[in-house]
Image (cartoon, rainbow, N blue to C red; front, side, top):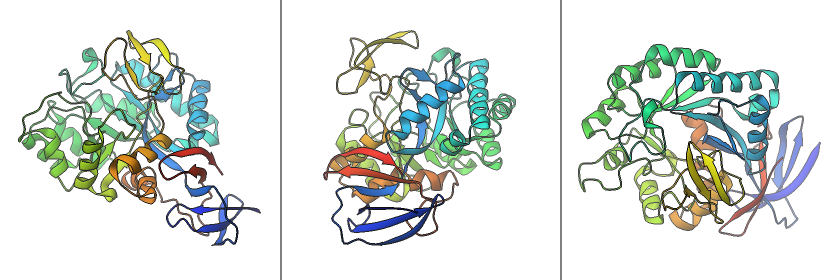
Length: 369
């Protein structure tokens, strides 16, 4: 039996938590005045890699996968969806096979990565909506190709982000939905009619809405408003202080509500790397001292350099949500969308908890129990 004292993330009240055999044995009021807080560990639906390791790399190894998992747990991320992005079939298949092999050989990795996310390759080929995805590999949906990727992944692909305007996208969404895969709209230049058709076919969420789009949009008829107005769609955001300005972040959350908003840090392969210049995706990339990652010599973003713990403080500061709501958007919401069992701070629940420091604006020093 292990007992510790902390402040409950939802109430701020001091609690005494007893853990035995990997489960919460009891939660009771504490007479102490602990400095640290406690909450369920974070769940991020979109991690592309970190520390110079990309899940898309042709050189990915199980050891590299473990390095990413270790770094993520140091930021309070108890679980995440390893995410592969637009690439040639062989590269994607290699990434998924390597992930599946790593999970099959290590129960800890299997716990931390319960399912996978395929972001692309069925995305817009237009500059702007395509984002950093390579144009030469953006293509129309192919059910046979997806089935082969799903086989390589051992059946673990549970989310697919695609652009509904691609030829064949609507019947493809119907097949994905019927197979139990969550369909997300993202990196799209779709019309309102195409987005509505995708939702009717089964699309359930929007991937990092407000990013991966044109710099200038029509003021009325555009794909951001259409997705925000669709009550059937949830949405993920990247609240890292760089991807979305505070007013946009606040507007998205007000449109969707905290019950339909997910948080992702969208960590890139350079997340966690020291400031400096790197060569990635055939391009010179610069990691700035503040963690922002840009195409060298430009203001253009080239991925995310922060982890989910940083996003919590940004949500509270910029969007005005409570600590409790921010943590649930970064944990309970993605679990619910993906059909994974909830993790609660309650007797009998798995002791998948995070201790952390909180000064009212910044979450720091996270530690998994």
